[in-house]
Each structure stands twice: as C-alpha cells, then as structure tokens.
Image (cartoon, rainbow, N blue to C red):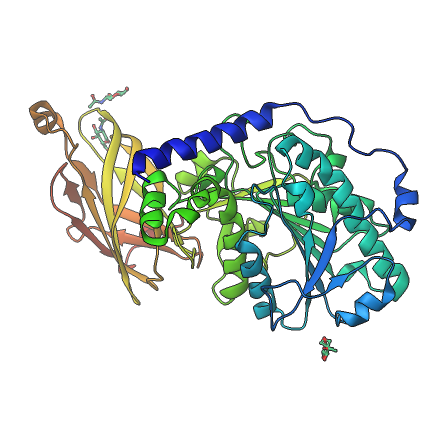
Length: 484
Ligand SMILES: *[C@@H]1O[C@H](CO)[C@@H](O)[C@H](O)[C@H]1NC(C)=O
Ligand SMILES: *[C@@H]1O[C@H](CO)[C@@H](O)[C@H](O)[C@H]1NC(C)=O
Ligand SMILES: *[C@@H]1O[C@H](CO)[C@@H](O)[C@H](O)[C@H]1NC(C)=O
C-alpha cells in the first residue's frame, strides 16, 4: 500500500468517525427498570469483569461475577488490598487494544498486591459510536452494581477502589461513581470522549461529584467542541492538558508514516488514536517512573503557559501528573498544563526565561526565532528553539523553554537570534541590535531562580549573529538575586 493510498484510507476512517459522531443517538436502548431494582437483579448484566493477575496481565483467565460469591475466591481476589478497574472505550475491532495489557502490567508493577479488573463491554463498545456512547449509562450501572455488591457481600470498602476510564470508558466510570451507595475513592479520566458529552448533563458524563477525587488528562481536544475526540471542558477536580491538550508530540502524519514503515500497516489505527491514547501512556509513565514524577502547573490559559508565566508551585499551583497526583480539591475546576517529550519517559524540565531588551530605536518585530542553550552542573541542553510572537525595545519578554534532560543547577545560558528563513536586505539593514544585561531563569521543577549576567555588563544580540553567552551572576549586587 502506497503512502497516498494509506492517507486516503486514514482520511476516510476519520471522516466516518466524524460523521458517526454527528448522528443523533439511537433510540430504543433499554431504559426500563429503576436503578435500585437493577442493583438486585444481576441477571441482565452483560459487562464482564476480568480479574487479571500480576503473573499474567495479558489474558482473561477469571471473571468476577456479581451475585456469585464463589467467583471472588476462585479468582483469588485479595480483599485486603486496593482494586483498579480499567474501562476501555469505543472500539472498531471489537477486541482489546494493546494498551489494556500495558496498563494492567504497569499497575501490577507499581502495586503488586492490588487487584486489577478489566471491565469488558466490548460487545457494546464496538457498535455504532452513538449507540456505544448511549450504552455508557448501562455499563456504568453495571459497574456500580458490582462495586455495591462487593461492599455489601464482603465489606469491601469503596475507599479501596480506583476506576481508570479511557475515552467513553471515562464516562462509564463517571456514571458508575454517581450511582454507588458510597462514594468511591478515585476516578482517573483518560481523555474522556467528547462527542455527545461536551454539553451533556453531569449525571451522564464524568464529573467531580463522581468520586472523592477525580483527575483527568486531556490529550486530544482538537477542533470545535462538538467535533473534538476528547472532551474540552474540565470535568474533574484537577484537569491536566499536556502540551495544551490539543495534540501530542510524535503524533503527526510524518511520525506515523515512519512508524508504519518500521512496524507495519496493522499499526495504522495508531495514527488516528495517537494523541487520544497518549493519555494512557502518560499515566503508565507515572506508574513506571514514580521516582521522576512529571509536573503540571496551574494556569489560566495555554497562552500564558507558553509565556512561562505559570511555573509556580505556591498554594498547590503545581502537581504531579498521574498516579502520584496530590489530592487538591479547588473550589473551581483548575486547568493545569505541561510539556512532554514525544516518547516515554515523557518528562521534560520547564524553564521560564525573562529578558529585557534595551534599544535606542523604537521597533516591533513579529515571530522572531531564537535558540537557547542551557548548561548546568549535570548536563547541557542545546539549541532549544523558541519563537517570540512579538519583540520590542525597552520591554521585558517572558517565554517558556523545555529541556529533555535534567541539566542540574544552571551555570550558563546562551542565546542566538535566528535570521528569517527568507533573507531580505532591508531586514539586514533595518534590524537593530538587542542589548541585554541580564537573563533571568526560573526552573519549574526545582522552583529555583537564577540571574545570568552579560560578562561586560551588557551584550548585543544581532539577528543572524552568533550565540551570546551569559554567566551566572556573582551576586555582588543585590539586583543580581532579585526575584523574577
Ligand atoms: C493480599 O495482600 C496483602 C498485602 O496487602 C498480602 O500480604 C497478602 O499476602 C495478599 N493475600 C494473598 C492471598 O495474596
Ligand atoms: C529605552 O530606554 C533608554 C533609557 O533606559 C532610552 O535612552 C531609550 O531612548 C529608550 N528607547 C526607546 C526606543 O524609547
Ligand atoms: C518611542 O515611542 C514612544 C511612544 O510610542 C515614545 O514615547 C518615545 O519617545 C519613542 N522613543 C524614541 C527614541 O523615538
């Protein structure tokens, strides 16, 4: 299959998805008996609850059946430890996607004694999207039935339950959490589905009321709200938008074609789901790399985050992404942001850079490209590209840069002003030099602030010129350690 044919196939696939999402939900899905009745009636339950094991996280070998006490003992459910319930989303193939086993394995790696249950609602999740979306209510009721039964029958506390739902599965978890007799401990929403849910009533989707603590990762919230694959609005106590939440690094067409060339066409569906599924892999990262937690920062907008203005940890403004998140329950939903690498481990180190450009002539230039290099006690990170939307004289500019490695304490900052890709003589003659005295850097991960000085008191940055170097100020003057 040629590249062209492949692209056509993928576009058709996405188009179909979009078209399906626009259709109105199918009517006629069972609405009959009240929830209370259903809780006692185990016979109609179609979802299956597979208790996987740490020895074999890949296969379904034993099912917990609500109403059948013996199944709990048969499956070696450990009543003294916590339980994770993994809930999948819409599926085209009707089979478990490969992430299910990866997540189960990572959960057991982190919590070897826990119980990891995979909720299997594949037969309904593989229907037409609007039908599958409507079924989240029924499946959520079934999950709640299991949880209530476990509590009544075995005294198994809801404090030990953590639901992890991906896409439509996040709304299944939300419905389940809203129906249990007692509030379950935690729900993690992994890019909760957007179509049919963005404007839905809170009782039908994931919301902060569904568990003692609800945390959400938003990784594919692109386009207008009614067309976005992932829900755009915050639906938890903490909502994290990695890389702005729209689209994830490593998920563009070029990357996907490269992967297909290497791994084969059967991975083609990854292209469409790459950003959506990234939410799961970020959570897996948090389970496997617990000693290096990924940090997220509260911010009012992604634009402010891009300017580096939100790297504060005061008053719970920063938090860990994923499993080790600190439970902060704000009065309002709070959106948090961070950048990531394109592969696991996803963690990067965030820095705010603040520079005052002195100039004798009035000028304003748009979309100027700079390169920044950071040298530290452990490592260095070179040629970090950044585009400043607008620069002008006698103004302080602030922007965000990220390092993929831990460079330790900062020692030197280098800066270069790139020429435009299209060279023009007028630009050459008319571009003034930027005079810089100090560069202020704040590290998000360590919260340390360092001021760098030009060796001669000031340095002039010329467009298209060389790197200019700034050393850690010696601190002779009180100004050198002033706060940012
Ligand atoms: C249940 O989990 C506990 C740890 O909380 C462990 O000590 C115990 O051995 C487990 N029981 C079984 C039967 O595996
Ligand atoms: C910038 O400020 C300096 C004094 O700090 C002044 O001499 C200069 O004229 C100002 N430049 C512009 C463009 O206003
Ligand atoms: C630059 O522009 C500002 C107002 O836009 C003006 O007050 C200042 O005098 C100008 N400076 C120079 C050096 O032209």
